[in-house]
Length: 447
Ligand SMILES: NC(=O)c1ccc[n+]([C@@H]2O[C@H](COP(=O)([O-])OP(=O)(O)OC[C@H]3O[C@@H](n4cnc5c(N)ncnc54)[C@H](O)[C@@H]3O)[C@@H](O)[C@H]2O)c1
Image (cartoon, rainbow, N blue to C red):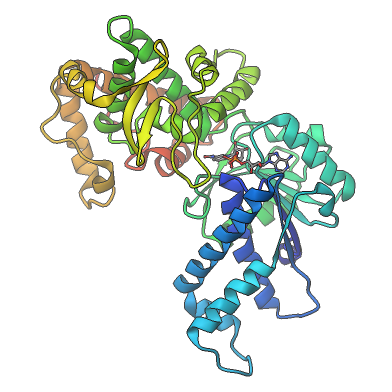
């Protein structure tokens, strides 16, 4: 019964954000399911959508309505089941509308933290800023001393630090959804030693109910996903530094991005991925890791400079990509930023030079979107990487070096005990970032 009780009054902090809006959708659907199952009019359920942005919250309610309708259409038999026993027979369309209205009615958009009196569970998804997160958690705790369970979506901040700074005594867990939360199956779960056992059980049940996959990570800054992504990014930035001693910066960025997408069969090149996450977000994650992992230098003057010049990446409220390393036109890369001239160089002028410099490639390069559905994926990838390792060209050599480094980063996450084992790193990286394969593999062994 504890699970259902924790769902009576729930709050999502940062509900208008990229992650918060998805978490709001998932929790609204789950809360509705519990409410329908209990079928007790006395049971009062409220889902607080909390954010400082009024405008953002209005947009989110529209998004929720649309997505709940889609969800209802996909799971119509289940929705029908919620209303069986009602006196009147309802037409399908009316039933769906009733479902959408019943689910959205559970949500109460609020911009004032003081509204969160008597909450049972809080999903925290505000910006990656430790001061902000601690302030909000401590304030809610002040209103509801000693009983709320907190699930934070932080990408990098050790959970124990949030716990101690906000005075939560083990009632907080790292519940790191991947973007977009409604679609991505992965949740990286971080439980510091003194996490209360009821919260651990709740998190497991929640994962099961939401149909997600749980991968545990230890409470070390960056955890598994960003522990790999940030170091992989730093390696790409280092390669650009080396290449741009001989060639222009935009050409070097274009080449490394091409190697890390096309040659390595990944969905995005490393600089497009940094743009997607947001250069500002990447810098804040780097700062969190750099301040806590003393034996490594985890910072990038290049990213700081791009940020200073206003090339920030991230997404617009409509989901379109903002310019960062690249200029985007209808979601496609059309230019590369040149920090010296402070302008974007069209890729039409770089492509040919880049392909000449990268040199020969294997005869067949798999495309990630096709290969992930291919029943012969394993064999095709293996053959491709053997051919890549035998291709002696600057592009192929750099791709092999990149793959070996990515594997080294992943193995170190296991030896540093951030991850329990190789498999956990591979699940996170494959599902969350790379899609076609995990970084710990035999593809890049050959020197
Ligand atoms: N974007 C990703 O790919 C991703 C993936 C996994 C985890 N995360 C983590 O999730 C969290 C949110 O990231 P995001 O990308 O959704 O950020 P975002 O900038 O899209 O959203 C943050 C939201 O927090 C709100 N906010 C700021 N101050 C607030 C306050 N005082 N009270 C209430 N709301 C406030 C903002 O208005 C905004 O709507 C971060 O901790 C981030 O590291 C992000």
